[in-house]
Image (tube, rainbow, N blue to C red; front, side):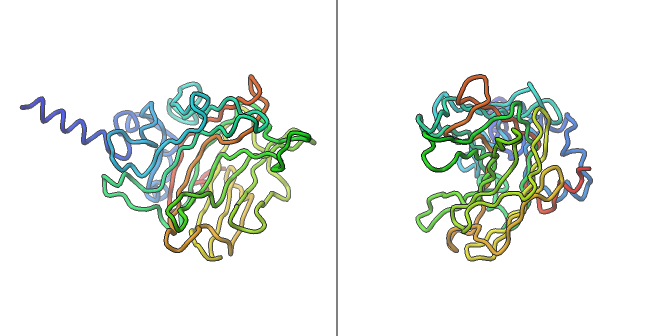
Length: 297
């Protein structure tokens, strides 16, 4: 009887929204934040579980989150101790075969649309919140497409996105953070793209370059609205780099809920060990009601 009870307890605990076994034993960047800032965090993933259970809780029927890959064995998400922003582990998102848009899209997507699993009394993400993660680029990748094989989009590389459901409850992208490559100096920088607004692209006037081989922080304030009262603001290492207000951030009033994700998503990239291959690392991701990057100096 004791064995049966123990097994039931183990199954219930496996569905908790943050695994505590390792996370509570390891000091991470999130645990070192000021108390007021920590209190504002409604969800986080420091990956100190040594797996991806904080993004995709096991044994939950309705997790309110998930990992969605496109490309079969050429799209892989895994926990790794190769590099970490803090603690021992991070997420490695790797794609292969993304060559000149000839083989389709390759994507690793770590997505979230509730503060915890529905099984655990979860709710939709707040109408306004801050979404953040630390990122590590090991190489100066380039997603730009050139004539004569550019199909007309110039190239894109989605690493941070928001989605919303349309009238038919089908998830569609609303705002995307793309990483672009400047051929003049080889530097990478972040830009915004929205298929539901005009203009669709918002670029930095004086681009703040992304470091290669070093961790950097990206945080986005996102206010959900299906009319033209939405807002989006982007900070890089605590510095405001992009902003748009009086914009649409949802598709219809029926589904004014944010769906957020980070990942590695494109149909063409160079700069890796082989053409079409690329890896990005993520760590210490969070959703909060206060801006966490204000603590970065």
